[in-house]
Amino acid sequence: SSFSLFDAALARRGADGESLLVFGGGGGASKTGVPNALVVTRLDASWQMQLVGEHRTGLAPVQSLALSPTADRLACLQGPDVLLYSGVDAPAPPAEPPTWESVATVDKKRPPPPPLYASPAMVLRGPDPDPEADGIRKPRLPEVYSLALSPDGTRIAVGIDDGSLVMMEAAAQGEWRQRWKEKRHARDLKSLAFSPDGAVVASAADDALCLLWPAEGGEPSEVAQPAFRWHNFVTPAPKRRGKPLPKTAAWRCVLMAEGSSSGASLFGALNHAAGVGHVLRAAVPRGGSGARVERWAKVTPNRLTALALSADGALLAAGTNEGELHVLQASSLARLVRLQEHPMYVAVLVLTERDAAGGYAAISCSTNEVKVTRLPKEKLVPPTLSADRLLLLLALLAALVAAAFAHFAGGGGEAPGEPPAAVEAPPAAP
Image 1 (tube, rainbow, N blue to C red):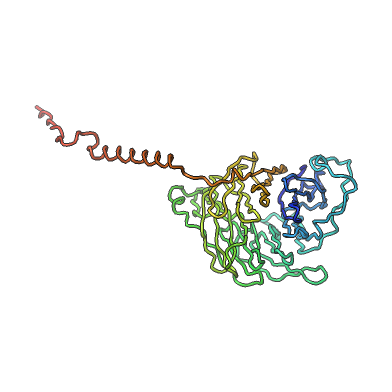
Image 2: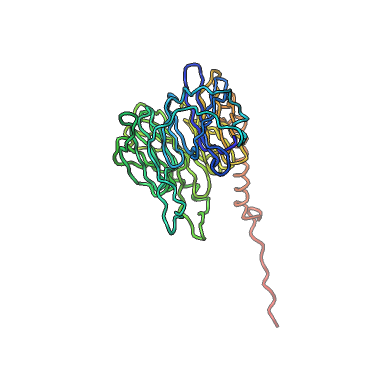
């Protein structure tokens, strides 16, 4: 793409295996000529991406988006505003066949393509930008940072960069109204996610908190972080301006999926203060109260920047700030595949459904580059410890124990059973 891609969403359109894949981004159209747009594509059953078209969004870049499971509604953060597009799965037919070259290059003389969709509905209007606000002499107004769309498309959770969470609800005649607003986080909300039944919203922020909110409103409950005892023991405390920082982890991404019959599962990406990326899985009862961390694992010594879950809940994928792609088994959090897909950080990550052969595909974005990585069934095998390797490890361990015992039992080099040699006194001085 000729502009940076900030987010992407995937939803299956029908029984033919075709999915709708939408990217959003921008490059500051008013100053550089690089457009702000939605790039709409279709992904067929063989993971071939076909370009549907490009929907320009004027002077507002698309910073975050969420697609309904039925692929008919798309919630977008365009500039300071939250908007909702309807009929996303049925765009207007283009006047001429779109080409990838038109999306990947900037030509100021070429007229912009006709819009794919009608004007979206305004969900939440953000503050107008104030060029004089510098955050010191003149504080700036809070701005929207993240959003999530409920499975039925009737509610949108909006995260503000001052730590507030706003629940918007569809009203009559296409209007939207605020259901409730609460502020329990001290930092900007990095990620939001609805439970599959839409009854719970998870919010994650840089203040080391992950909260579970009843969608109807009420008191949230906190998801406790793992203790990280071993990591805290072997890792020195990070410092800022010469002062040690607390050894905590910041939540980066959260996802929710179908769990047991009594609730849902929450998956989270956490970056420890020392820079190590972890993932966890927690069981969330109905209503959200009393979530319990079931399993957690260290994924990479680098920071995690993106997280994705397959539609069947079998695979979990994580991207890092070094361009790595890690694919994990969702049930055990065991790493199945590690790939170096990008030279820079992974900004967006999406996992497809399982294909007829039992494989998957991962769609990853880094700046303006998109890669579709096939994950065949043969590669998605949990690592096992063979009997030969186990015997070799036991033999090495036994040899180390024997060597240590011989060293300490021998008195540090003296022959066993012999008294130490006598030491003669030095002659007296005359």
